[in-house]
Amino acid sequence: MLKLLIFDLDGTLVDTAKDIADAINFAVEPFTHKTYSIEETKAMVGSGISKLLETLISSSEIFHDNEKSAAQVVVDRFLKFYSEHLLDNTETYPHVRETLSRLGSYRKAVVSNKREIFSRQILEGLGVLQYFDVVLGSDSVPEKKPSPVPVLKLLERFGVSRNEAVITGDSNYDVEAGRAAGVTTIAVTYGFRSREVLKDADFIIDRFDELLKILPELDKKRFIL
Image (cartoon, rainbow, N blue to C red):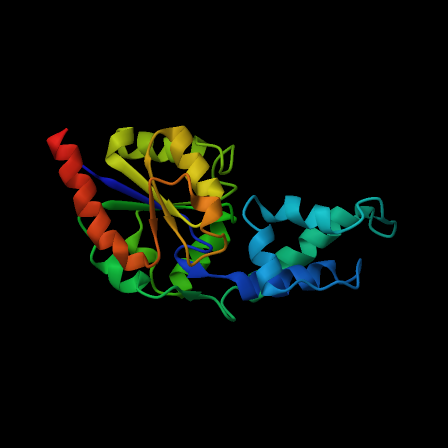
């Protein structure tokens, strides 16, 4: 029987692309004349913001007055700006609220490569935090997606087996983490990655509310097995 639903955050439950793009552009402004579009941001994010920001600047620069490297400065600038603008443009994707309200029979968790405090603040600010039993961020566990560690931690925490859980996300990181953990994977096409990148998922959906059809079917298969 299916018991646990695991969800990615950015690109799956909420569209955070504009606010992340604004924070990235503010963070790198002292180091480059380039600005990044929303589409470019969608293609870049996913594996953790600190690592991404370091690739966008020259890490050889040093700020001698405070002995901070460029990498440290750009991350600090991002975190300060983003913490103050988390919800300027961020919203839940269509059908997310209504669907979550109809999934009360399952335990639910969020696993994000965004820091936990930001993940919680976004979910709370959008009025959907109450639907989740657990929220794990990049700083909640020793390894981030695509590692299976966050997923395995949730299985242990809820005392469920691999065939009693499903992970839903918009990127290859979610699919890879789920497959490595041995759980069913569902990919959404409306997020930050193309359908081609998601081809290894067990299911691919175009709307969040398609979960209301897929999940009962998964339950039936498990009952038969």
